[in-house]
Image 1 (cartoon, rainbow, N blue to C red):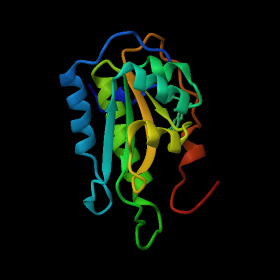
Image 2: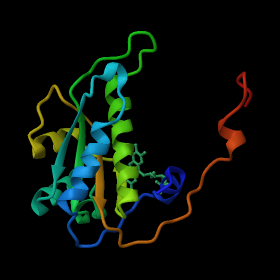
Image 3: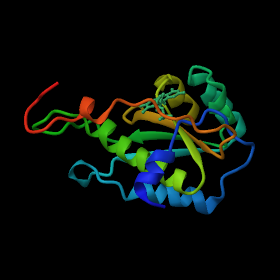
Length: 171
Ligand SMILES: Cc1cc2nc3c(=O)[nH]c(=O)nc-3n(C[C@H](O)[C@H](O)[C@H](O)COP(=O)(O)O)c2cc1C
């Protein structure tokens, strides 16, 4: 699938079929994450792949009780094993590196006929407890993955001239 077509097809899916993801597809998603770029190539992402129904239900409660979270056959907990920041710009490795890998996953999932949703509304301390994640590991985001039971909505987006200008800041 053409990359821009895949980008256009991705949307936040908030209703999933009761159908597991094939192990080969799940492996392809993790491969897409593995190949992501990262600052200094630290590859600090670590994923916990959750399929157990009871654990997913507990994660749903930790994620503001968003019902579709427990409904999705797979929930990823996307973590980072570094709390370093980039020397000059000061940006954290964790959120940037893990987010790139997660979006690789989201786009790869779309190209395989799967749907995803980023989940930022979660209590890290609860997720840590449920998944046994050590305290030195940063839990960056959760992501639901599965076969969609809803229809894509057309995205509301700013226009190009609202988000990009040429040569100097001009907004
Ligand atoms: C970092 C991040 C956190 C998000 N957290 C949630 C969430 O907790 N629950 C939810 O339903 N959607 C969540 N979303 C989805 C956004 O609401 C969605 O991406 C946005 O409205 C644009 O819609 P689209 O993804 O369908 O294009 C999150 C998205 C991002 C990138």
